[in-house]
Amino acid sequence: MKINKKIAFLKENVFRIGGRRVLSAFTLIELIVTVAIIAVLSVVAMVNFSGTRTRARDMRRIQDLQKIASALELIKQVGKTYPPTTSSLVPNYLQILPKDPKAPYPTYAYSRSGGNYKYTLTATLEDAKNNPDDPASLSYTLNSP
Image (cartoon, rainbow, N blue to C red; front, side):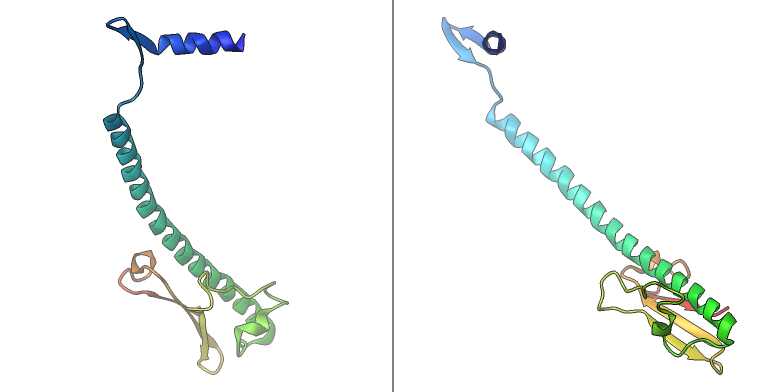
């Protein structure tokens, strides 16, 4: 039964020219045009995809700083001041200390000021357009409330 189906399929693609049987197929030009269209579409997709990955890493950096800021506020409620380093947030306030998606460089910066009652968290973004506060700056800064 399977052989009959294959023969029937082949008979549909065969036609006669001057008494000779000729198998129909794609021409070389048709194949080249198809490959060229696929190549152009894949290049466009890769360009769009690379921008999406950069944006995702920048959004993760912003979320990481917000997570660290929440833990800093919790520790301040207990100790009345902010800790000297962010490593003291682990394991009581954070399970792990967030790291930059492209670690080890660049890293997140933390500094205390105002008699240990204020802090500044900073991350370096890959694309300034992803900065919600200042689209002209690659540096995203989160200050204590």
